[in-house]
Length: 450
Image (cartoon, rainbow, N blue to C red; front, side, top):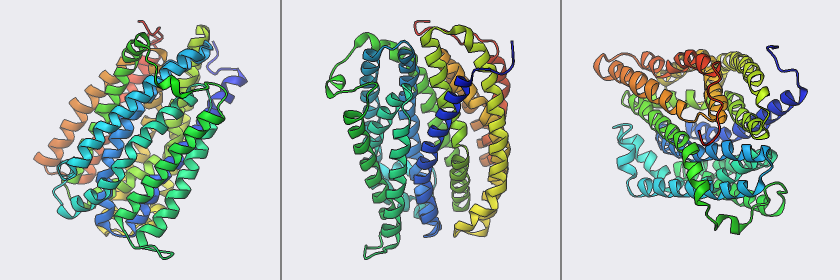
């Protein structure tokens, strides 16, 4: 068997989906980056406060994406089998679950913002700034949930252009409103952190409305209607829970783990919080293609299994692994080369700037591991039907190895933020050894009822 797939259609589908989803992700990250950069030029306390508040947004993102990934895995198989009626029912289930999770998180954040942010740091100036931002931005959670679930349904049937257009409009709106509301340009009042939150909330509302209009007026594949969301298929819901609950749990513990990582660094001072925020945001910016490759893989593998073309799966998996490594090497090189340039946009202390440089250097190495193991496990293994493995893998690495060792380094041995950051990111390399074995045994190919 040849190492590389020789079908032009495979490469066309993979790179088309990866590029379009990557551009969407790039623009989505750009929304956070615009907040990050503009507030970084406003004050370090504002930057740090919003960085902590965005950990709640990240947790919401992981929860909603957990729902959406389960939806994509199921619906892409139905798309391969041309079963549009079941895709409509699955979309209804995904929408309900995403909205429910967003409401629960909104209640917690709106009524207990101080208590939530106090879990990350004891710096009162940072907490105060974060609360100011959080009380406004939390109203965007439901709009984000609706938008994400609708786009996931469209992505499962290979409709991805609309997500790019929506994300681009959101970015433009957010940047313009950030400019006028944070600093008070063009006759608007100077609102600082509140202005940034209002800008993002407005952008989220508009993007939600655009997606709803597209689904109602222009989509010709799924043809979703309001009555689809009023119906409930109990049997399909049970199937969704069986397939999707491990993904949701995995994303939940990952989101909580990221919050725990921020809390560990947050207790080391404002400079460490700011440096981590900058490094993480730039990392997200340059790794959009990496994460997009996982989403593209989920659609391709799911659709291929749905079509019944099981003979193609092995060669697809081998080729994809090579592509992941090449993407990782490219991404690592880009991150390393731009790290000095991007820090010129921030007005932060020398300590925070030095830490950010060190953090980005570490990430430029570990991203090679991320680029391989993340799409291999969440793209190939999950979409192949083994949705529980990633959950168990994350539990072991993150909660039994990474977080305990990092906490010991921070609170017992009092080591430097750089050493702690290396510990926090070590799993990205360690998971590669597990991914190599798991993917190449091919025991992850299974039906939903397995």
